[in-house]
Image (cartoon, rainbow, N blue to C red; front, side, top):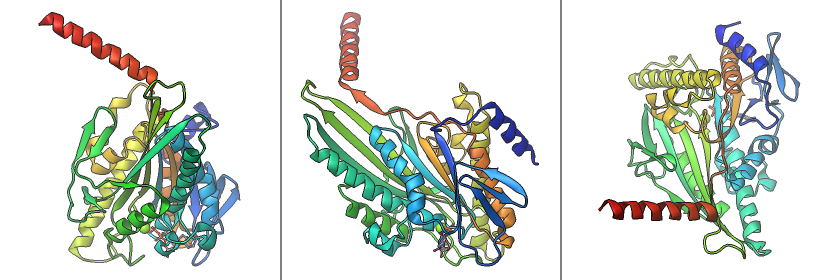
Length: 385
Ligand code: ADP
Ligand code: MG
């Protein structure tokens, strides 16, 4: 066993898994093209070469998009409506089913999920989310809830942030923000009111994604893409004076580039450059996961999130204020075995991370407290003058 596996197994013994952990890791095995080398042995474990790997869930190649959604997507909708930030990240080698799992075929997005059945996790999340929002807004019982949702879609390619909703913007900056952690300056944000608004944005963004050519998959994606939806809600009941309470949550859906070692099959300068970036961002992400997985609870500031755009953008999901579901996708064939093991190892380490999700809520009392503080500060200022 490698060093990090030994560390992982000792840590695992020390820290038994919570019943609703802030970080969950699922594995999805895509259908085999040749001989399948992997065996699922239970709901949450699989064997590779006589070695057992255990996760929060394992989906076999016959699992449906609906199965994956029910286990990974549906809880996220609940969490987001409660005021938690929640992320789903797809990780795996090229051709292992990240894009299929996350978005599904684009044609399926415009159908009703009950018709096509091929929608990925993302469109299902928003179908579910908007149907719940509509129900809550309609159900008055003395309360008045209003929602506002806005979305953005970005790509990280060669450590540069591009706007998938405005491809003329190719090198955007991340700005730190006291209230919300960070934001991407000038990134297009679109307000959305229904499922159809979201699918239009998804389709537009996905068709603007950078593709590279590798042998393994001619449409392989060499960029990381991240779809964000911010949900704000205001709730007033008959007892609220004026404000009531307000919640904000951020849904983040990330489809990472394939991190395989073996990208240099095709010649060409662009390809070499892409390969270098992929290798670097893979090791930066791995480093963050190792540090967060092994860190003491009070040492938040030592994680080098700013070492790359990708890790900066994933700061909340890897050790911060968000619930995370990581979906590790693997190919079951013999040729992919070493990449599959690398992916599973990454998943095991990620599963040791602890995030610190909180309900992002401001209540009338908070507003009263803040008003008091402002009044006191004003008085002090007057006295100082
Ligand atoms: P990645 O994004 O990881 O490079 P893709 O999602 O593009 O991989 O998948 C590669 C190919 O395999 C696509 O043609 C996709 O439709 C197919 N595929 C992936 N996973 C599944 C699955 N679970 N069931 C059926 N087809 C799949
Ligand atoms: Mg892909």
